[in-house]
Image (tube, rainbow, N blue to C red):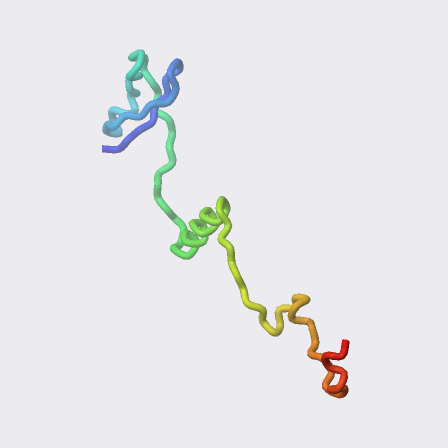
Length: 98
């Protein structure tokens, strides 16, 4: 049996398990017994492809806790550490004489 959400004017939202035909008539509030109207709900059917679902899951997981990524320097990365040039070899006698 499906689960439906109902709204009580005094106590708010409550859920009940019943058939579709019975849900159209409403359900009594468990606190006060007043009739509650069924609330519209979206079905839990996924229309996304598996690749989009994985991307969405990955985005939701990293939005709260970003993952720390360590990356080694590549020759073409362009950072300041990789832009340093080797000392000139034409004056080998000056190496270490700073």
